[in-house]
Length: 303
Image (cartoon, rainbow, N blue to C red; front, side, top):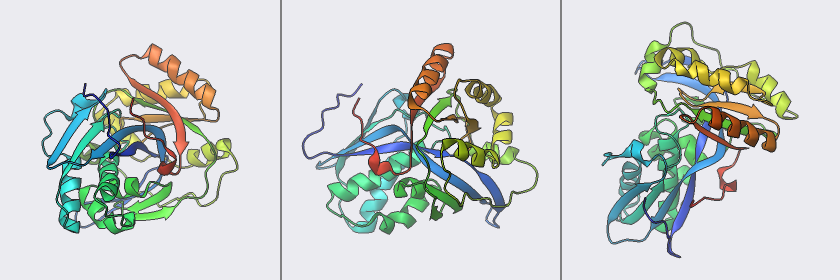
């Protein structure tokens, strides 16, 4: 483990889990990319990115899921830093430390969130202080989920991730996130998908409470869940285990998997449910946290 002792000049950013409450595959472009429509929120559970002044560039990774990134010399964080330096004409110098808590290749945008946190942190560390919207094209070039993670607000995401429309106000809610620690390949999931495309069905009206939110989500879907279960059958077990938790209002997969979530109305009930599931399935990654509609509300953790 790397000792975490940021200096007073450090810039610290949370990189929260992105959660697709809905995900509709709406079409396929001539270039082979699929178009999507998804209601995206965030979770209070997050990676943490620390950026400090330095004469050169370095990236160190620590935390419970750091092993998932071992051997990645050219990862999305280093690419984000270099492309930001190229865009702005700044020297690519910084000491970066990533505390990796989120599982890798998990359908919750962990790498994308880390890249977005890198852009936010270096924007401050290098004294650029530019609006984050200035970096949306750069973000899209890093990955389809990086723009939404950079925006850091609940949105309806459409197209190939570049069309971001503010979501209606959402009620307070809590999430249990569960990953069976089985990485799932997004290209493999899309390859396994069959059938017609779905028409867009964005959430247009603000739910009155979390139960109304669950009802609205229940009339929508994640179109990638069925092919993801073919690629990794344990996802079915995860969804069933979440659905059986006391207080769970909705059980669904996020993104292309394998992380799934349960929606809860009460934080204490949510915490208890996560505790019981973690005891029953110690080999799974289980986390309870509030549903977050603005990532600026998250206080980055160093633990």
